[in-house]
Image (cartoon, rainbow, N blue to C red):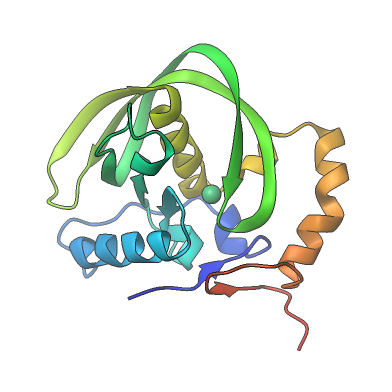
Length: 186
Ligand code: NI
């Protein structure tokens, strides 16, 4: 099932998401499958649950296409993740976001992370990721903390983007996948 992607301006994107209960009523396998389907339909490399309106700590990534040489088969589901360490040099990389179409900006983040998480079978993992793999995870992890990549930009850059972001929240932006806009003018 393909979900509509919530655009910039929805409060769910600014809220810290809640942990998922292992024996609760969320079918994480089904949800992971639907999130991958939604992400692929939008040609994304990562998708976090708040982006489909669910304030829960889960995201999916498949960055194979970004760097087939180094990220071959880098497809994962992260449930209740916790970044344990973040280190290395800060480096700049141009990020985009399915909730903020048509805007890409360079963001600085540390190069390496150590993260603990559960997969869709509730197996626990602790892994180290670096470079682009770390970057995709950091961006998605931010989503479940209620942070968007635009929050990392300088005040100056944010002021420059303000008009565009307001337009996005009103649905005045081109997009070739299903979206929902908080301030859509009918
Ligand atoms: Ni994003």
